[in-house]
Image (cartoon, rainbow, N blue to C red; front, side, top):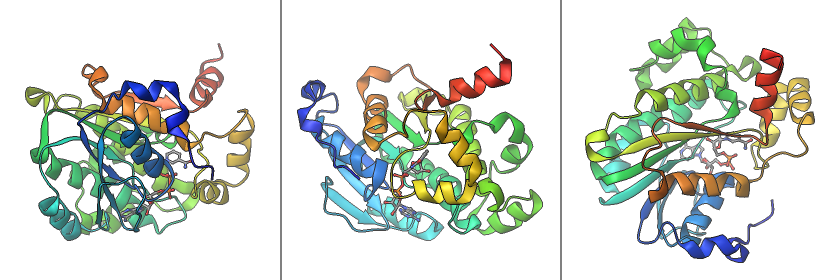
Length: 274
Ligand SMILES: NC(=O)c1ccc[n+]([C@@H]2O[C@H](COP(=O)([O-])OP(=O)(O)OC[C@H]3O[C@@H](n4cnc5c(N)ncnc54)[C@H](O)[C@@H]3O)[C@@H](O)[C@H]2O)c1
């Protein structure tokens, strides 16, 4: 994977994240790593959270497993206050055990975020890394509603009841569908403090987990990717995450920005025949 030379891009001199402290989960690899790097280039400080160690682009690193309730609670207690933004980027691909996919991508993310709100400054920004895989959320509303208060210890029973397994990547798709809905539902939960939450939904991005998607989805992934000229790169995603973290976006609430080189429009066109 190519290491982005953010300093060579003229627009980074704008320093749109100057003096902001941002918590980036999943900072050790892929999109999270590139986002941490760009936050620094844009004048911010990065508090990184990951289960894997890194020394790149983080001012402080907290090692934590975001699939575990107690670890998340301890992590939040340990993290400093006066945070300006959270980029919830850590995630597992559909090749990981299905219950872990739901725990990390959905249940843990929600639990972490809700606990962190008390550590956020007024006018803070929360950005959730969803996915084009969440596009089909309107067709999964029954299960999504049933997952609203899903606890870590109930994940396996919930998956059994709603027939969610790794088959066809369903655990991953469900985690992102429910994340998009949760983001929309909380569009102004913390409005009295000016805290906003939005999502970005990338199509396939060249990171270490891209091969896992291709492995899980097989011919379907090849076909989906063949309609586009290229897969995304972390440097296609990081600027949009940083934009949402910046003071330019206070009226974005509950938005889900599709970042897919045109793939969602391609799906809409096929669906609605325009
Ligand atoms: N790569 C893609 O094609 C693509 C497309 C759409 C959305 N996404 C989403 O983007 C996000 C980042 O993915 P990426 O492609 O950069 O993958 P990646 O594997 O390069 O990075 C994921 C990071 O999350 C961390 N992580 C995973 N499980 C964790 C846990 N239990 N506790 C703490 N940290 C954990 C990993 O250690 C890693 O650093 C994910 O949420 C993913 O679902 C990726």
